[in-house]
Length: 203
Image 1 (tube, rainbow, N blue to C red):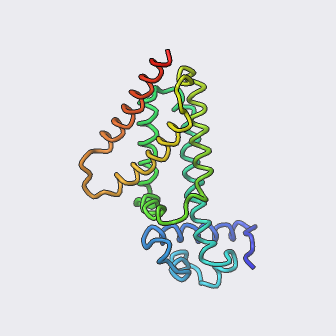
Image 2 (cartoon, rainbow, N blue to C red):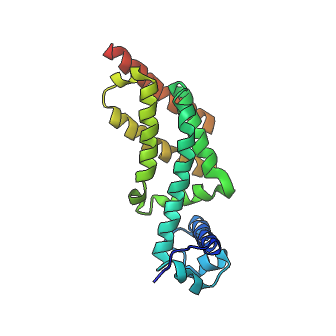
Image 3 (cartoon, one colour):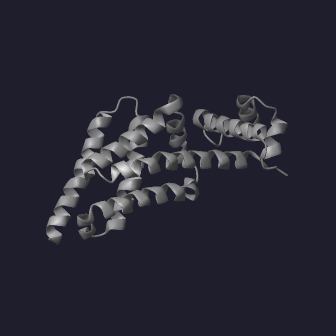
C-alpha cells in the first residue's frame, strides 16, 4: 500500500516523481509512458515509486492535479489586477499570462496540454473552472453595467473554454498565420464589441 510522504526527504521524492511524470507525459503522451521511464527521470528505482504510488495511473493522476494546481496558482494572483482593467485589456493580460505559463520550462505544460485532450481531463478541471468563475464574478462586481448582459453563464463558458483551446492550439502550430498579439487583440475586440452592443440594447 502506498504511503503518504511526511518527512521533507519523502516529499522531495514525491515531487521528483510527479515532475518526472509531467516530463514523460510531455515527451511521450500518457498512454506511452512507463513506470520505469518515470523512475529513471526521477533518479530513483522503480520499487521506490510504489512506496508512494499504487500504480502508474496514480502517478498520472498526481501529475494532472499538479498541472491544475499550478494553473490555479497562475490565475488567482492576477484577479485583483484584471478586475480593474477594461475588458479588452483584461482578456489580453489573461491570454498572455497563460501563454507565458505554458511556455515555461521548455514548454513543459504546453506539451502536456496537447495530450490533455486525449485524456479524461474533465474530471480535473473543476478547480480551474472555479478560479476562472471567481475572476468572472469579481469582474462583474467591479463593472456592474455588465450585469445587463443576457446569458452571462453561457458567455463565460464560451470564453473560458474557447480561450484555453485557442491558446494551446496556436502555440502548438509551427508557423501560425497570425501572431499571438493579433490573436489576443481579436479575442478581446470580439468580446468587447459583443458586450457594448448587448449593454446598449439593454439600455
